[in-house]
Image 1 (cartoon, rainbow, N blue to C red):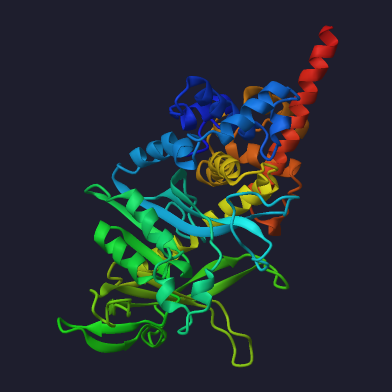
Image 2 (tube, rainbow, N blue to C red):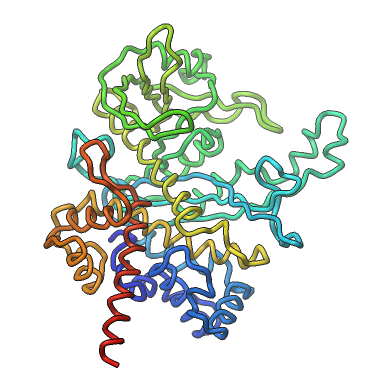
Length: 485
C-alpha cells in the first residue's frame, strides 16, 4: 500500500499515518491528525488558513508544535512503523537517501535552535534535513522500454534534523588547521550511517538497496551497508584505490578501471532541464567491472588499508560526445552485487535513476508545501511542522507515480473524492473512466497542454490541478448552500 492510498479522504489518510502518535494526551494526538489532514486537503496553507479563522484552533496548533513531546521522531513514529512493516514482505525495496538544506529568512530576532546554512552562513538560519525514503522495486520490470519504472512510495524510514554549529575559536586558531580539535565534533557525514542504523536488517528473502548520490560515497557508509546486509547503488565521488586477493594487494584506481571497460549496451535516459540547458533525451552507454574491492582509507587512529575492504562492482553510464564537444553525462555507480552482464548493469543504472524521487520530495516539501515559508519562531516548532509536511510531500509525489503505475484502473482509484470526480468530469466534459484520464484532466487544470512532446505531467502540475479542483468544488458546495437558503 503506497503512501498516497486514501489521500483523497484527507482525514482517513491522516488517521492512518498519524493516528497512533503518542504525545501524552489524546487531544494532542487528535490535533496532529487534524493538522496533517488540513495540509493534505490544502497543501501549502498557513496554520491560520487551516484553522479557518478560528483563533482557538490556531493557538492549539501552535501549542502542539511547540510541545516538548512533539518531536519529529515522535510525530512520525506511527508512519515509520507502518513503512517498516511493509518492508518485511519478500521482494526488493529501494531506500533512497539524501540531504537537503532548509533555510528561513532572517526575522527581527534570530530564531533559536537554528544554525548557519547556505552561502551566507554568517547570517543564514536553517537546518540540514537528511531523509531516507522507501519505495518498492518491481519483481519484473513492467515496462522494459521505459526510462525508469514507476515505483510506489511507501514513506519515510528515518529523518534527521542536523543543526550546524559555528566553528569554535580554538579550532580556528589551531596551528595544524584545526584537524585535531575537529575530530571531537560530530561530522555531517555521520548522518548517512545513523540513518542506516535506524533501519536495521532486512528479513530473509528480502533485499533492501540503498540508493544515493555522491554525498554517500563514504567508506563508513558503504561498510555499514555491508554490516547490515543492505545492498547499495551509490554514485562514486572518490577515485578510490582498489585491492585484490587475501593480502589486499594494490590493484589500481576505481575511475581508471571503470573507464577502461568497453560498452556492453545502451539505453535512453531523459535529462531534466537545468539553468542554460533545456531538458533532453540522450542515449547512454553502459559498461561494468565486477569483482573489485575498495581499499579502506586513512582514518584517525588507523592507517590506510587498516579497515576491511568493501567488495562490489562498478557500473559506468556515460554519454558519448565528439572530440570538440563539452564533456557529457557520466555516472560511476558503486554496486554491492557482482555485476556480470548487461541486464544486471542496466538494473543498477535504472535503480540509480530512481534517486530523483527524493529530489522531487525535496521540491514538493519546499515549493509545493512552502516549508521554508513557515512563520514559526522556534526551531522546535519548525522541525515539528516539517516532520508532518514531509509525509504529505511524499504522498504528493506518489500521486504522480500512481498515475504511471495504474493508468487503466477505475477512476475511483485516483485518490479523489466522489464530489471531486463529479466536478472534474463536468469541468472537462469527459467521462474520465480511468486513472490516466483523471490525471490528464487534473494536469490540464494545472496548465499541462498535453501536446505530443510535452511528456507526462509531473507532481507539481498535478498539485496545481488538485488545488484548482479544490477551489471549483468549494464553489459548487457554496452555490448549493446559497440555493438552499
